[in-house]
Length: 431
Image (cartoon, rainbow, N blue to C red; front, side):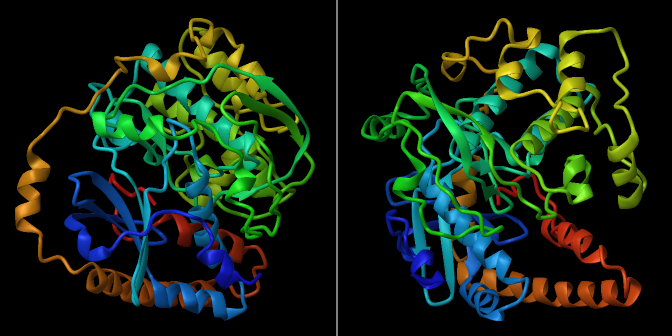
């Protein structure tokens, strides 16, 4: 099987581009442009569109850029496999001569970072943090049970669904590692409150949890380390120790775990470090290790103890244990779920909570936008964005090469910057 076969492998519905009504361009991420679209049935979806020529160029390049092509494929494959209320489901694939696209459910509540900034002091209360933290733990636990290391947890990648529950998005930096001695732990299947009657009817026809290897055994990974972890349908999660590690240098700098910076290999525990950074940011309104530049930020991550000012609380204790620099000593998922901060949480029922801290207010804004944007040409729009992106990448690479000739570690850092800092910043950068 070749990469071309992998590219079309997931069995997901095909969507005709002409059948979609384009409402607006939501934003530009590192790998594509995201549009808010409406189906013929009236459903709102987020459509990530990527220039086909760009994918084929990366596939045929034969150099390090090929990893970006494989990340695109990996993201598509994992999206097609998710059966979890806090993770996106691949709703369909758009394919034309010029673009390919993936459609997932649209989250009208924006992202967690935007929501935090709307708070009076740009910080959340402990109770609000507890709710969002618990759902993040469940989402990460599910990913790890599938052998997926997320590697890009940050508030901008935590979207708020129509019902107020979170949806974790953006998996192009994820990788897969093989589990060691998985132990099946039976749990109750939790069902999410209805997004809408239509969505609820569809969800009843689907298995809530399904094994990854049924539809993701494509043999592609950013780190060439694909090994499917089986998950028993509908009622189980996995506990395991990683038997392998990734050496890729990826992530957003303020959230990077020490082991990624050191390049000694990393596993699932990097996601728990990121959770600690996110919880700190929710509590204090800033990340714990931010420096004036990348070098200072990395130095702080490797040497600074997080400043947990205020009275001793279970939340601060949890953050301290998550931000343990030694991954072997870092708190595990079972210890997290058993921590005092979560003693009031019913892990089987949290996703059924009918009144999350914030529920997006229904608005007619989308209907008004539809009438004024019917002439958006998705293909031309994406072509224009990718042309500018290629010019910026070429200029950036040339500048980096001139400024850092001979620095063997610079390529790793440049990779982080290129992936995580698109030129257009938008709260809907869902990919």
